[in-house]
Amino acid sequence: MPSTIIPKGYVPRLNLYDTQKAIGLLNRLFEDNLGGALNLRRVSAPLFVEASTGLNDDLNGVERAVSFDVPAAGRDAQVVHSLAKWKRLALHRYQFSVGEGLYTDMNAIRRDEELDNIHSAYVDQWDWEKVIAPRDRTVDYLKETVSTIVAALADTQTTLRAVYPQLTPLPAVDRAVSFVTAQELEDRWPDLSPKERENTWVKDHPVTFLMGIGGALKSGQPHDGRAPDYDDWNLNGDILVWNDVLGHAFELSSMGIRVDAKTLDRQLSIASCDHRRELPFHKMLLAGELPLTIGGGIGQSRVSMFLLGKAHIGEVQASIWDPHTQAACREAGVILL
Image 1 (tube, rainbow, N blue to C red):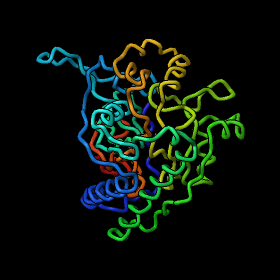
Image 2 (cartoon, one colour):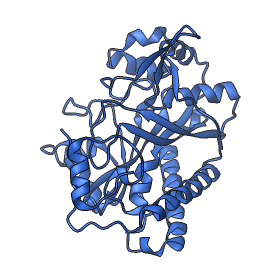
Image 3 (cartoon, rainbow, N blue to C red):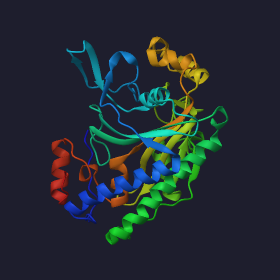
């Protein structure tokens, strides 16, 4: 059920054309900041992959990929949900070394996505991946990388504010990241839903990295779903910020240290996904033929929404919207691209 709600009294800080210019500047700034800080090189990425390769990300396992045949190639293809697995294979093919990585523009269609202020059927991300050494598969290395990404976000905001003073009243990105696990939140608020726990915590800790997503908590339920074949559920998490415009926690990135052969074997069994062991990507990973990596996706439209103070994702990206969303935005004077 669509649930778009435009906050009472909301007025965009930038007009329509300034918004477009600011998005372009923001993207260039953040790409440069992120790439320089993490030693990432830009590469080209696919819009679709062969269905039989196992490269597509199945997200929570229930979302349907947009599929079609390519008669000239004799293959069936799927529009990507994300590039979580493709990036790791690309690092192997490009023969990147430890400490080197890549980033790319990822465009996806998620046909089963909710439609509300922060969700759309169209997804745009900076997808990034970096080769690491066995010694880097630690919580400390994960936290260090998160802090680097947040610093790149804060640096981008500083320049944006200098160019667009209208954005200055928005809260500054706190470089001091709060780190907390999903289990710690459940222990503290067992009677709240996962989203309610996030809101309660992030309101007092406006830049948070929530760790340990995908595996079952003490309650027997995971905080949120994660596919078993890219993130190590003990070494992953979401970058969350407090969105003053919408008044709730706001996810900017999902990321983590990726599964090694041992962790993949265990998580496939837990998730009852043993059939994937016969897919080409999974065979390579289980055989130790792919590099150890860390990576994630950072929402381009989400970052634009947050740094430009927008109330609806349709103000920063072009997509298709339901009648309820169109009416709510029209009534509030919000222009959807």
